[in-house]
Length: 186
Image 1: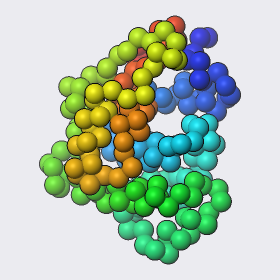
Image 2 (image 1 turned 180 degrees about the horizontal axis):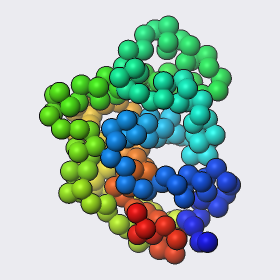
Image 3 (image 1 turned 30 degrees about the vertical axis):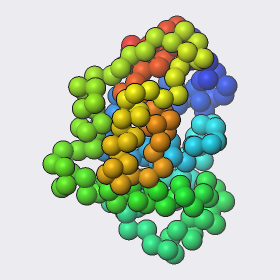
Image 4 (image 1 turned 135 degrees about the vertical axis):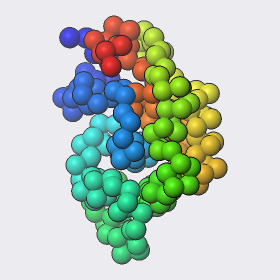
C-alpha cells in the first residue's frame, strides 16, 4: 500500500498517517488537542511528539480546555519538571492561554471554534496534488490569514507554519501525495 513518504519511517508515523492525519475533524476538543500538539512540535520532529503524546495527554488533562484554562503556577511548575513531556515554558504558557480563549469562544463569538476554522474554506477541504514531499508547502495565504486573525483574538505560539500543519492535520488541507492510498478517501 503506497503512503506519503514521511509515513514510512516507522509504525508510529504510519498509524498516525493512516488513522488521523488529514481526516476532517470538527470537534473543538479534538481541534484543541491537535493545536496543542502542533505547538509542542515546533522545532522538533512529529515522531517525537507522537511518542510523547500519551504523556502530554496525561499532563494536560486529555487536552480538555475547560480544565487547562485553570492551570496555576503550581501546575505549571509540575509541567516544567515532567521529563516525559516537552518542557518548554513558552509552549506550556501558550497552551494555557489558548485554552482560556477557547473556553470562552462560543459565548463571545456565538459559533464554535470548529465552525470558525472551517468557515475559511466554506466547510470543504482544500485538496492539493503534490507529487513528492518537496511539493508540499509549509505555509500558504490561508495559514497566514488564520494565524493573523487568531493572534488578534489573543492566541499565542500560532505562526503560519504551525497553523498550516494544524490545517493539514485536521483535514482542512489535504496534502496527501497523489499516489498515496489516502488521497481523496476522506
